[in-house]
Length: 115
Image 1 (cartoon, rainbow, N blue to C red):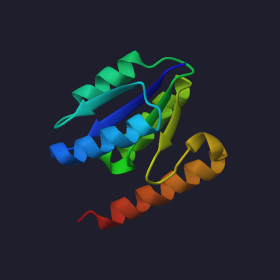
Image 2 (cartoon, helix red, strand yellow):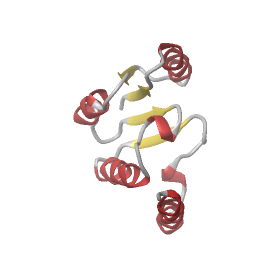
Image 3 (cartoon, rainbow, N blue to C red):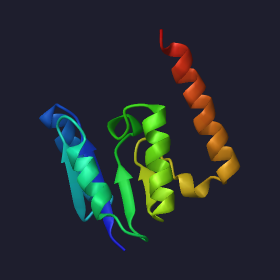
């Protein structure tokens, strides 16, 4: 079981702050993106059942609620644990119906904000 981290952001200071926090959280290997999602794609190609992924914040990981839902489904199918440091979100600790309802509610809010 490996503990991965993921860092994203255009600002080097922001990425360094995330990297330090993920290192403190016990991440043995951290993937990074300054732009695009190539590092995230590589990370997903290397994760296996039993691994854990920790990120700094949801908005650094997914570009939309739809993107987040797809990533969470992929991790669930691959039996990868997931945790966010800022939101202290551990989807594995929320029962599936409540988590699905939460994601659906956030998706509706996101849709209402798009004009």
